[in-house]
Image (tube, rainbow, N blue to C red):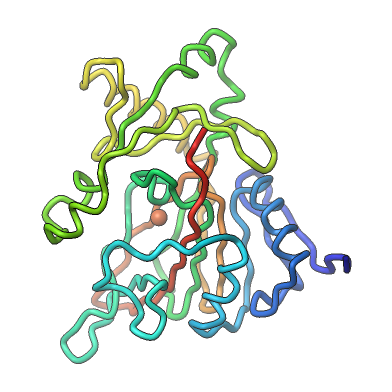
Length: 277
Ligand SMILES: [Fe+2]
């Protein structure tokens, strides 16, 4: 197999690394494997100055696994329906994408039986102020636990509800498609075996085996620990940035921007992962 020629420059602290010297529109098999390993180690990869058509974004995502069709079809790209459009742009009276990006800390599509493993986000038009993406990892949270707490956490499962999260924004048909799911709090990464804490926000999550209010406070405490400012990387977007990240052990959040002043168009693809264990 040919050697990988690009380089990985880790950010000053995890998560995240910048990939240099790689054109994402022509990935070889070796590149894909190396990028999967790099995502397992660094969580987030940043590739600047990429020139990608929608077809390129689909083609580069596909070797990482089966693509997850977006659950809200009204915001997909007509010519590539596996691309979800995040945008505040309105064309011919129709919003071309979802204007409200997710501004709470989360890991993508935790409400699926097999949640998203990899997310690809490509910036086409990006505001010069705001509209950042924040990242933090949850491997450290697990590493910091004492043995007794680890043992206790190993028995905690959490139920997640897609329909609770999108209540009021789904058609009855969309609601039927996604029954609630249960995942363990302690998750093992399938590539490198690292353990992380895997949890969602309070709006859609219900830790099992404890009273509801206690469960929600438990989630709040985990969130608070995970997202302390010193643990957070803030990505300030430039046009043609491609971010790819591994949702296992990684949380992210959007930040607001002045929608009256700036246009934003970002394309997303999602690759289906394994059932968490
Ligand atoms: Fe997300």
